[in-house]
Image 1 (cartoon, rainbow, N blue to C red):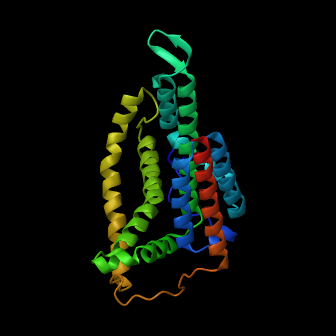
Image 2: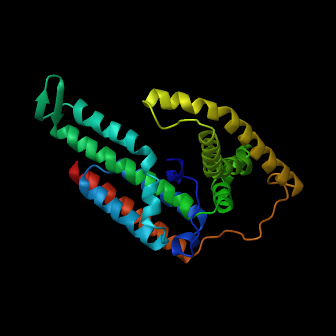
Image 3: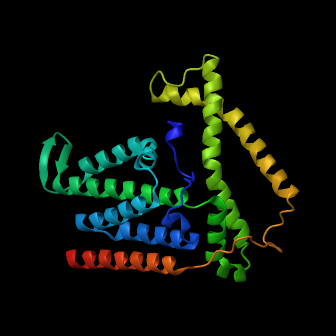
Length: 267
């Protein structure tokens, strides 16, 4: 299960999507999320799905690798969809006592399920195609105007990218601890959900200690390299917008305009 969580992982490739400026990918992701919440009909979801499918195709990230990241949230997704099916009032299709299925409930459940799946895949694509250091630089550049207000934009961007990068590291560490305890007789898979949750408690202390050790190693490595925040810091490769970035942003803006038009037409 832990290995199925792909958030924060980077998939190395030489695709056009990988070569885009990180600011382009961050802004495009935000625009896509806005589109998902503006959609009112299935036609809009088809358009958003087609755009995301095209991005996946160009990025050369295997579809199996992307879909693997959906496994950990399937239970939450199913619960949310089922809740909407039975809790929305409208034209009743089937009813048994207080339980009922309505046309509006099915429609809302379908919309919510599609929206969540596209949202997760879209967010994952950002980390799949962007290196942590590029993500830091992109966030810092986008937040640069806020530095005039006294905000430490470089430190904020660094913390966000480190937190994202630590997700797969902590999952890998948790997997190692689980295997070590299973070798000593621990059981994490039998029993009901409550018993499984209780069995996870002994993992917390070693995982917490391991997290502190990783953080200490990172701090020492940064100190050894004379890291002092943004003060006097230079970059080997400065990020800058290219023609392909403007084309990508134009396509996303056109897609957003199409979604807004679909929303207006549906009313």
